[in-house]
View (tube, rainbow, N blue to C red):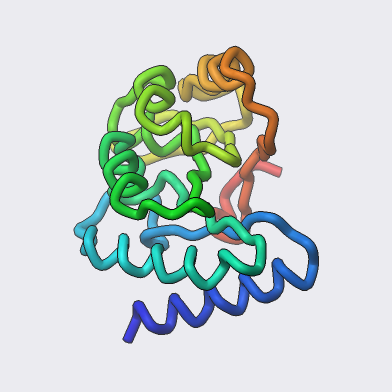
Length: 172
């Protein structure tokens, strides 16, 4: 039932994106950034359905590097299994580094060809928990990732993600 609900929500967002002339919608495998047990094959099938629905509307559903898909080798496998022309990755630079200790280069080498949108944010680990910091005040290799993108001709969106709605304790 949860998958059908999520697919219904994705179709609503796809239709809205089409009406607004927006090229991308964001899809996440889970609501939580940290890795958790996920039905990989079921997620591939669901994402394929979203891509198929969005195809004739000119929309590209972007799957974000979060949850188990923050591990870029898994994301690469996910994208290869999906095999849809209108698929793509939203690279949240934070998650592969923070949850899988990946360098920006490792992540880019695995998924760079799929990246169509980028989120940046910074953090440190404090007492085993992620503590978000102002950009440049944490240890996430944001500059390394951005330099790789520029070096490889990336010409799409880069967005600072600072969502107080989910993390009310974020600095103003």
